[in-house]
Image 1 (cartoon, rainbow, N blue to C red):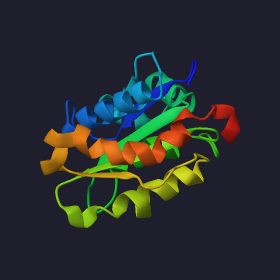
Image 2 (image 1 turned 45 degrees about the vertical axis):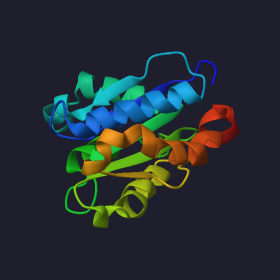
Image 3 (image 1 turned 30 degrees about the vertical axis):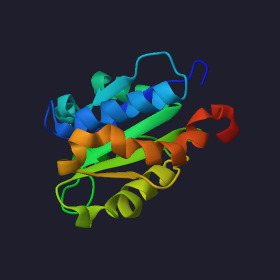
Image 4 (image 1 turned 180 degrees about the horizontal axis):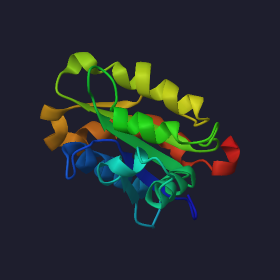
Length: 174
């Protein structure tokens, strides 16, 4: 990954959330294993909620969308609410143009309280990212809150499955 950008997009409405911590750790692990030397860019939607729903276009929201659409690898993280991702994340992604993530490798991540929601990452979040044109290697990452202290251990097998997509040249997917 020479010159590629890794971005973590976090759809938790609470600042300083466990979802934010997990997203940053996943994005940094992905970037490091792929040989990416630049810092991970974080787009934390908890600070943008009011801007996403403002009657006029918001420069802050537009800058965040530019960061997301400029990513080569995009970790998209949300807590699980009502068995799916947050409305905040949906509102942000709805503001992107059609196929805005074409050529981007998107890695969906949901943090949940109950493992019964594990399929939500594949059934709900993955299709949204595919609709936006992203290449979304399966499986997405479903993390139960109780497992967050051992996140690095859980990342090993998942990272091995998605690594070929993350290390490929972005032009391979455009």
